[in-house]
Image (cartoon, rainbow, N blue to C red; front, side, top):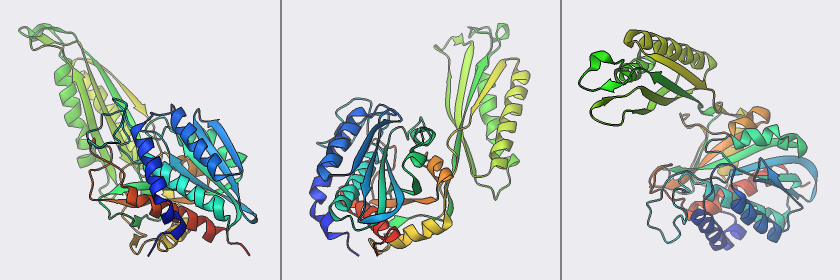
Length: 385
């Protein structure tokens, strides 16, 4: 099934926007140049209102339809990741240590494409709030926008968002009813022993063996402490200690994440981490401190809105999966879905490197499909007459 003809007509413009954004990535809340580019395009399109500086660099644009009606929020994230790009593309990142490796350049482009089409046609009864959000990759920009009153200020009744999906054919869509992405928490363990010479370990209190013991014990939380039918991932992702081969260090550090869907599972992991750190510290004679940071909540789609969104996607693509298995990744759009009904969907990016990979690139052929989805969603949700 085709994308909207008018959107197909300016697909090359969308490619240009996306590649400009890809070459100029920005991190977290510092998306000022990205926002400036977005605002320039929105002014060209002739939207009715542009509100800047929300959550530091976020933008909300308001477009009025042909008649009165409720307001639908459409959200795209703008920030990149702190990593070097290895694509070799002629539009690769021009900024060392920053890369659009999660498709946010494509997300922003799809929403801009929908804004252009809807500004030209205005074939809907109500308003659209185009939400361009910073700081999805850490920082919780969606939460900040909610806390700053975006949903109430613009009287947004429901919200939707799209994400790139490597490994799914370009232009295909999928979503699911209820939980679609996990809650994610972060733990930090700081271990302090007594350092000394590697030849005389009996004169030290070694934090290295304590760190190894804790890391191994943490693996038993999933294998021995949780109910097998409750989804759970606990990952130790960093261990830092030591400076030389003949020095037993004084300190060690462990870092990792906890991904859950149920609060009872989250509470169990937190308790077990507390017990493991204390017990292993006592066993090895070190001091240890656990810092547990509660992060993004689970992303939970409204069942009716996700079914509606899937049906709209079916007007753009022949291949839509409305009941895909939920994923253990996390997403701060969860904060908006906690406040308003709506849905989060994925659009295929083809057989490409995965998200957060230095070789990832958003497929520009997916942009017209995503823009068409957003546009059709508004027209179907807010029909004229």
